[in-house]
Amino acid sequence: MLLEIYGVRGGAGHGEAAAPSRPPRRHGLRNIALVWAVQLRRHHAWFAHDLANCITAANENPALPALSVNVYVTKETVAAPGDAAVSGRSAMELHAGRPTLAPALAAAVANTGPTAGVYVLACGPAGFVRQAWDAVTALRSTHGGAVVFDRRSFAL
Image (cartoon, rainbow, N blue to C red; front, side, top):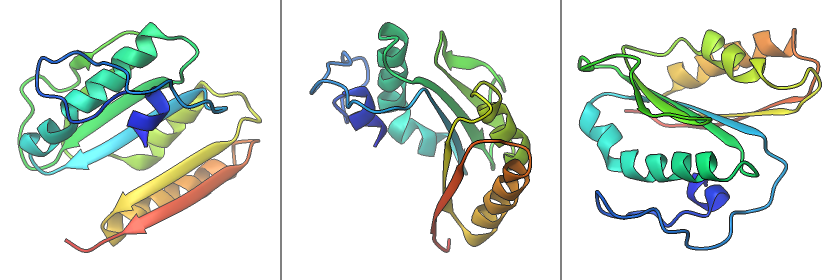
């Protein structure tokens, strides 16, 4: 979905240019926040290049939504937790441990207007999806805009 929004060709090898495959998709999005938990750093590496290309596209084209990517590595230490892998208006950061979704969601919504719509997609094990639902429920009581929750759950 992100590759389509940012008009980036996916699957390029390391070091290849982020050549647009098509014009970016038109939409009403202003900000996208991705909170992603992986067990091992190598799992993040499978998609790191594509995510970096999306961030580069967002930084180069202010008409595209800003993209904030926070990757949590749950079963390994991260060399420099919190370091920005790609920075600018859009950025990607690596963290050690599990994400706490309520503060992450609140931070993602903090820069939106008080009546801006928010779409949350939670994908993961049932416990993760339940934690996301609890965070959305809390957000609904304080955010003036519509908050839509969608989920995809799987067992590990």
